[in-house]
Image: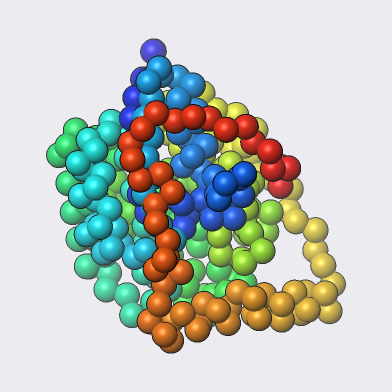
Length: 264
């Protein structure tokens, strides 16, 4: 069977799709950029836009990003959200389901194929980790249901124990490391029926265990540098994306830049 050549791709969402903590020469790379690079290698004249912005909630994606993506009329759209919603004090599940479905329906009506992705439920290292994990699992069920309802492409990269492997997460314990972004990209390419490195689908060996004292020191440092600023933004009603603009706001030909960062 001949592999489909996608000629245009728009990625929307939050920090996950913006590519936070997958550093590049200029800003961040991330799983969506990695997928775009693979797509560009398959089709001449390939065009790509990434309008994801860190901190965005699902409602903001539907209101601000979905209309932009719909006007671009790409062949493929990545629509991944909900992670910031489950971190809020109160979660309105029916509203989240309705917003996600509305966004997917709007994109499908333009003729696009929509790529959705479940989130990790690994939250033991976060405050109220068990609550966050349960919420993340509930959000994943919504994502799966909407993908099935509209017969769109679903990625489920964290269906095994590998989601608890610290190697897939950055130092802030929330965003993905370069290894995590590579894994998601490989799952996306596999779901689209495109060439990918099968080794990236094999779980990495578990991270080395550290002693109790070293772990507590790491907890203190994490709380100071990552938790405290996050709490401060919540109390002030601010978002990490308030002053951020989309890194690739236009649907234009993609120039592939070499990967210069060491593998993690």
